[in-house]
Structure formats: C-alpha cells, structure tokens
Image (cartoon, rainbow, N blue to C red; front, side, top):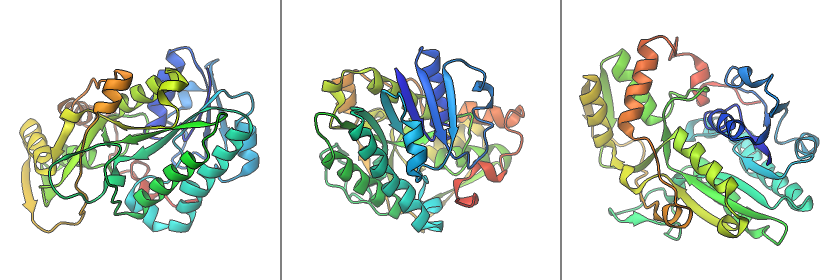
Length: 325
C-alpha cells in the first residue's frame, strides 16, 4: 500500500513507519518535526520512505501529501492534557479542525481507509470497576480527550461509500521509541526510579489500560491490512484486557523491579479512572499484544543506564515543554 502517516516522526509514528516499511509498504510521512527529525533521520535514504515537512493545518500541504495515496493513518496531534492546555487554540485547530479538513479531502479523493488515533481517555472519570467497551458511556475530563471525542463523532458523520474511517482508542502508551517520551506515566516512573531511586504515586486507586508502543504499531498495521468490511466505520479499543492496572499496582511493579522507594500521596491530581475491555479487537481482528509493563520497565531502565538515552531531562522528551508552532 501507499500509506500517508501524519505525525510519523512522533512517539508512535516513528515505530509504526519502520514496521510498515519492513513489511513492504510505501510510506509518506507528513510531519512538522516539532521535536526534530532524529527519530526518522536514518530512514531518509530508504526507497519506500518519503517525507513532507509541513503543517497539517495547511490545506495546500494536505493536498500535496495525499497525492497518489491509498490509505491514511492520522496520528498528527498535540498529544497529552498538559501540552493541549498550554495553547488550546492551536491545539484545537490541529487536533480537530485539521482532522476534519484532512478527512474531507480524503473523501473527495475516495480514500476509503482512514485510521484515526484516538484515546481511551474519552472514557474519563467512570465509577466502579466494570470493564468499559466501545459502546460504554463516555465521560471525558480533559480538553484533549473532549476534542478527540468530537473528532471521532465528526469523522463518523462524514462516512459514506467513499470514506469509511476506523477509530482506534489507544490505552495509556509506554515503552521505548525512536522519539522517546518521559511525560507518559509509566515511562516517567521508570525514569525516576532508575535515576532518583524514588517515585510518587498520586491517589493510586485509579484504573488505566496500558499498552506498549510496539503493540500500538502492531494494531495499526493489522487494521491497515484488514479488509475494509472488517474495520470501516468501527471503533476499537487498542490493548489487552489483562493489562488494566491500578496506578498503585504500576508503582509496585516499578518499585520491585528497580528497587526504588515509593511514596503514595492521597491527594488526587488526575480524576480519570477507567478499566477497559479489548475483547472486540481480539475477537474481530484476532489482535493480541506481545509486551507487558514488566518488559517496558526493563527496556527503558536499561536504555537510560547504558546511555542509549543520554539525557532523559532533555526538553525534547516532554510534549508540554515544546512551544507549539
């Protein structure tokens, strides 16, 4: 396939692009390179790889990016609650307005398969311990999650015989990536435990579904390669039902494996709590994950210790520290 990946130099995109190229697909990466191009620099001389530097908000850039494309994976966004809130007008234009503009142009060009990266944060603050499915009540708390939900609804309303989007709600992502992030909770705890030998958990009883970044890429590729009848106009939670944990459980795993001290603070900064079922993607697409939290803890800690990640405090590893364009 000739695939356009927007935001391909990002945390998920830089893993996904390599996976797609290795599988024989041709990939065009549209990215503004807000965090630099280190994550994809080594790909620039590869035959199946092409990149366009540009802003997803620019209609002319989108037009150029869509030329001779079969399929679109739309990852480009201002990601994370903190980064979104810092400059919410730019973030809204990027995450919502540009998404709908891109979708409209795909529909005009009869690009049927459009994969949209959403988030399980749309489930937000949910009471109880029941597993939430794709049809459960949604209660987003943050502006970031609310905008993702608005985009989901708008994309589905655009659906017709020429345009059949698929919404992927990713769990809380962790793991090593060519464009590393340390503003994600698991990665942050691992960094602190490795360097400072102590971690803090706020609240601790909140549920989250967790998924390794390579498993996210695996799910996206599976959806891309599935018949449109199986994925068109559908929503899938991405992860494993077995990988739902309370925050205190994550803390205890990090503490045990890395030998860190853990402090539990009752004050709750983040009220989100959701336990998510991933049975739909497993049953309908035969998707299973390969990695667990324990794998992530070991690989990230090792990368810090052996110098593969030279300075974990570098601003480029934190979305909210980079000024939006």
